[in-house]
Amino acid sequence: MQSETLEKNPPVYRRVILKLSGESLAHSGERGISMDEVTAIAKQIKAAHALGCQIAVVVGGGNILRGAQFKGTSGEMIQEATAHYMGMLATVINALAMQDALENIGCATRVMSAIKMDGVAEPFIRRRAIRHLEKGRIVILAAGTGAPFVTTDTCAANRGLELDADIVLKATRVDGVYSDDPEKNPHAILYRELDYDVVIEKNLKVMDSTAIAQCRTHKLPILVFNFKKDGNIVKAVSGQKVGTRISPRSASGERILVNAT
Figure (cartoon, rainbow, N blue to C red):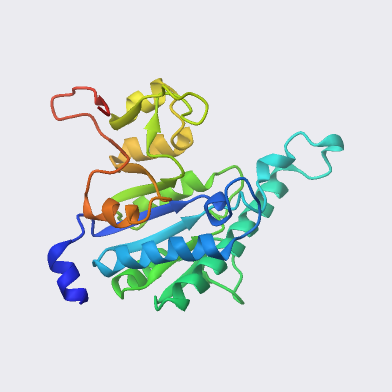
């Protein structure tokens, strides 16, 4: 059955970074971890992986704790750098939940942490991570880059470059990049294609500016799509039309700004 799937829907991308926010692991508007949500994402990841695509997952920690939430707290009881480390530890909790969800449905996985914690995860070593991917394991990358003041979006861009990924898949709860917040403005325009410069100039809320700049410098494309629609991760790795693709300008230097019809 898997060979038939490979013949019918070969992946366009050999290796991808899938960026999941911590909030994607919880019910909408809630905190903590919902294993129903985690399992639903895991099933989509398994289907995409079965096509032959190598997948490394970068998880956030906002469903548990964001380092930024302590910024400017009364009396500065928690230093900002400490708060960021706390947020990194939250991503490890999410990574372990995702690992169990994937392994419960038959996927081989490895959790690799940028902060050393031998009891629950391997240390992130670039060559080892690549070997795991080549061996058909899904790699879950935790603890961001291991440094404070760096978002998990930037981590996804960095790991994409380190692991020679073909694209960063940014999973969101909306259908792509809009001209405005679609949940507040029903007339917001969905862009199907953008170049990095337009994203930065228009201050479109895609990923943080450092992540966008990293991808622009190294011409690493980004696909922003709605993971809540079942099958969209498979569509993303198969190159089907889904979400918003952000890439370099065309060879002629023409700016890319294409709206959905």
